[in-house]
Length: 203
View 1 (cartoon, rainbow, N blue to C red):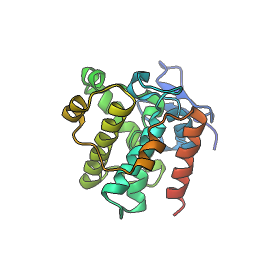
View 2: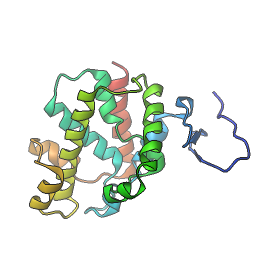
View 3: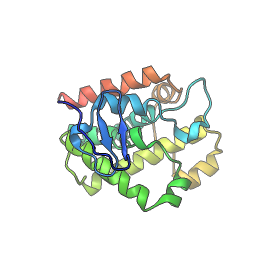
View 4: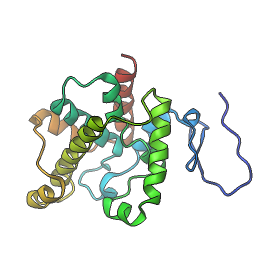
């Protein structure tokens, strides 16, 4: 399928390595490829890059941590909703990961762009345009749990401060914590993200 053509109006699209051109104002599911998402998220830094380690802590690695936490919270979640958990931050492959204080400054325009992108991503991968409220709640809980762990383990937060901002630490075993909280290189993060996607998409 060839990339879509665009007119000479002011550019609001991002060119991907796949050759796709994703219009940020009117994103089409046809212009979304999982390889572009994985590549981009593996190179977008959480915490504005203010984390310990030789590599950034990427959004791709964060998505996998959120997936692991959600499995602990709700182990029997349907595969389709598990895929939604993995893709919950997918828009950041093209708009980046803005820290929460800056998102508050940009709202509601930022939220509108983000919502359009997650809508297109959902349609591209067979998910409903509107996610169930219970799923959104689960994702928020797991996301906050991941933020707590990242904040205290690699981003320099004291536990009390992280608890006030993100709530309690999720219950994860030591092996899982060690595996997900040592920042990976971009190629490793991309590979793990794609592997998990394929596990969920092929069932």
